[in-house]
Structures are given as C-alpha cells and as structure tokens.
Image 1 (spheres, rainbow, N blue to C red):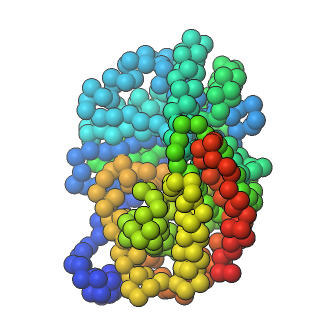
Image 2 (cartoon, rainbow, N blue to C red):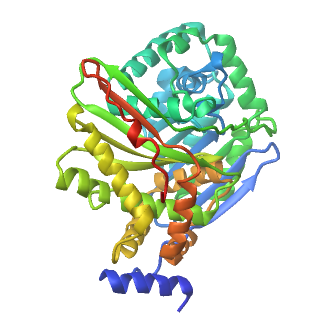
Image 3 (cartoon, helix red, strand yellow):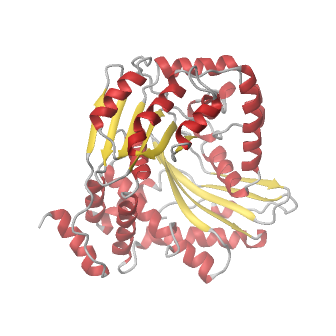
Length: 451
C-alpha cells in the first residue's frame, strides 16, 4: 500500500466513509507554441463535453489611475464584434450548439472560456481566438457598453455585502492595485477612451503571454495544432504586469441609504515570493475549520448559538504575490460589536488552541471531498488549471494535493497559520445604514494571531 493509499485509508477508517479505491488521475499535458502561447490540457476520457478558454495575466490590480476599469471594459467590448463576426454571431456561435460562452475579470487576470460538447472544441477555440486576435472596437459600441458597465457598477453598489468587500480592499491594500475595484467607479468608466482600448489590444497581441487551458474530452495534440493556427497573429509576449503588495490594519465604516443591516468584512493578508504547497494546504484547512460551511466554528457560534446573522462565512483570495483571508457577515447594527467579537474570539481560539478532537480529520475529509467533487466537471478542472498557472506559477495535480493535505499534521498547520496570520495588521470594514451612528471599533483592531 502506498503512502497516499495509507493516508486515505486512515481517514476513511476514522471517519466511517468508504475508501475511494482510485482517485481520477489527471491526464495533464503542456505545450508552449513558438509564439509563446501556452496550451495545457487535462484529459477526461469518460466526459462527453469539454471546457476551453484563454487567459491574460492582467487584471484590475495592474491598472494605472487613468485606467481603472480598463481590463473589465476590454472583457466586455470584445463581445461586441470582430473582423469576422458580429456581436450576434458571437452569441449564437456557441449557444446555438447548446454550449455557453463566458468571460470574467479579477484583480489578477482576465479570462474567456466556453463549455461545449466535445466535437465543438474547434468552434469554441475559433470564437475565443477571434475575439482576442481580431476585435472590432467601434466608438458607437464602446459608448453603448459604457452605459451597460455603469449599470453593472450600480447593481454591485446595491449589494452591501459586495460593497463591504470593496471597502475592505480599499482600506487594507491602500497604496497598491488590489485596493481598486475590478470594474472601476462609474466616473472611471466614463473617462476611458477608444485609444486606451486599442493600446490594451496591442499589449494582448504583442506583450502579454496567453495561456490556453482545456479539460474534458479534448485531444491535446489537436488543440495545439488548432491554437497554432487561430493564435498565429500573437507575437511572443514576455511581459508579466508588475505585482505590488502593500497592506495595513485599519477601520473603515461607510454609511449607505436604504439598508437595514451592518455588513462586516474583517480580515488580513500576507505576502510571499512564491506560495509553497504546505502554506496553501494549511490555510485551506484553517479556513474550512473556522468559517467555510455550516459545520464551521463561525457558523455554529454566530448563527446557530447566538442567532446574530443569516449568512456568515470566511473566504480566501489567492494572488501571485499574496493571499488574503477574511470573515463576512451581516447583522443588526446594535449587534455588530457582539458579532465581531465572536468572530475574533473563534479565530483566536483556533490559533491558540488548535483543532478540537477529530476536527482535523473531518476538515481534511471536507477539503479532499470538495476536490474530488470538482474533478467530475470539466469547467472546474479547466479553472483549476488556469488559476494555478496564473496564481501559483504551475499546475499541481489533484492527487498530489490530496496526498499533501492528508499528510499535514496539526502542529504543522498551526505553526504555519500562526506565522502567516501574524505578519500583517487586520482591517475592519463596515457598510451600515447611514442613519446609524458610527460605532467605535478600535478595541478590536489590535488582534494579532496567537497573541
């Protein structure tokens, strides 16, 4: 029996669930084309469908002050038409085949992808490559889409939970690009020009590397040949946008009309040159135990025992050079201090005392189970390929991650999380009714890991 099977058997025996005899192995291949386009596949022989996409290593954190919202605007505008397709042609091309064409922008990257039946992979690649290599930017289209994006921004502003996250980023990461919202503010979007869009497109063609990822029923060699043809306009791009990380502890409270709850985001971050696997595993185990799910400490303490919030959870964001962790919840303004105090107490209790009896094994089973569930879906495997490549610098097969997680010891997890969560100050961000007096939360700011 291998070490990996031994670890799985140990967890299965102690948790009374059947041992999966064999984890679905990754059939991973990687090829770099002469023009620098990276093609990666994760073949799933029993799938009927495939997910395929192309990623640019530029997001909102890389924008200068006069460019806020540019990456997100570009993501929208390439759907308005190419030299070969109208906007309607783009929409129908994949949807008429039963698939779907998607795009998104984060602070770290911009991605375009499609979910299709296996035989339509060439069509999906053709459409996505056409959008990136041959966009037709016209002023009339940009003006119409500008209005759409402003409406999108207003829709986010109407969601106080989203706004609290943006307030946290603006306060905690002040002085670096992560502080800025992905969409930009409405005034930023209104000031972007067609010339800036064409300069962005020049960078796509000449400067940035492009990463193509696919998972499901996809033939690697055929995809390589297809990408060589469809991305032939791409020049070898070696420019990775500069990442800068800064953080600080602070308190930021914002009043908003027409809401009744105080929306809290409390958290911290830490930087690194390269995120090592053990730190990644330790933070994942910590996050699940503390706040990811109904069985977590935060959910049980704040919702089940005290009835202070309907939704409460912790979350992790991973960037190329840093990671942040935080707690999100919404409660009545008069209960905010109690909810925050409980969140801090539960977090500090874990960092001081570690896992409860059997909690580490249950948490490992949670993380491993989540990985396995995702392994059945081409889109999740494709996303894992892309995000690990762009955030971690390379792909980590699922079976290696499972083995690494199962081998983590409690002392090792605690040593890592006590270290990383003690590196930076904590930030408290609150979006509350503007009719409510701002509370004094300074007593909660000095929290330090393991203090």
